Image (cartoon, rainbow, N blue to C red; front, side):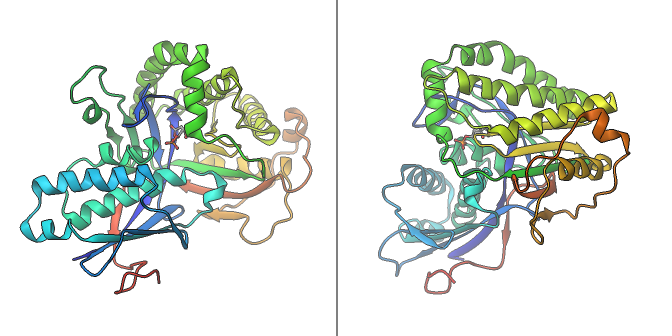
Length: 388
Ligand code: PMV
């Protein structure tokens, strides 16, 4: 087969990756842990095709042709997969390694929403290339070289990305992702993404983390003290399905990431007023319940990602709806169907929640844990290698 199509998931970190010790190999300063989201709701789809008739390598992203040869991360991923393939493949597959390739990739969620699209995209590309060239074994060290967080999208469930050892001659190979538990480990866990309406262009995560590495003293404390402790606490909480600890560590780690970003000089600001209102609402709701039932986390953007048990989704979203009214009809609630219900009368007064102005949120997606990438049969390229 000279054409392969795969789908790959988005992942959301609960212990964040922030900062590299090697920019070229994308070796991180710290371990991180993430949840892989279900591909029924959000996924990247990538077709890769090799042919002796192609005259150059080409790539189309979300319907638009993009430069191939000037994208170093894309070139790294293709080169690395080919290196491994050359060592292991059959003569037939080896012939294919000399042919040019066409790549066509799309996300079923807006790239501009800042929802870890590069992680799903690079994981999908690397996984598809591996199927094309018959490469077996761990692909996370290759996906890492596309976008750091992409290495975690190679596996389902909860995944740990190991930073790897310093001074290791096999340093690049020592930094890999590993599944902690699979997607069926915690079936009641739900993930709700609140996509915040925001037009402001943010500093990219690559630039933000480089600047933090160079200037933030708090980042050094985070790497040396906070993260090692939190990784252990998080692994235990996940293993034991201890939601309260899981939630507390998740929120503290997100807050610390954004504190590091403010400690960066000049500061990198990712959360906005709506993000901070969501943080307040979650804490108010947890203290109303007298128990930590909902956790938030924020990446390099204003969107909130909430973790909670299935039984609490309806109440939490009723509260979100009250606090963030919307005029959007169809398409506002996406993913796993959401039913809201009237909240107890006392909740608004005891939480002291007032409705904000309308339409601060763009839409809401409910999803859950999911598996890693897999191959599918419907291609995005036709038999001559052009996008369908
Ligand atoms: O992989 P990148 O370069 O897109 O960086 C991701 C950084 C965060 O999303 C903020 C944290 C993480 O661990 O995913």
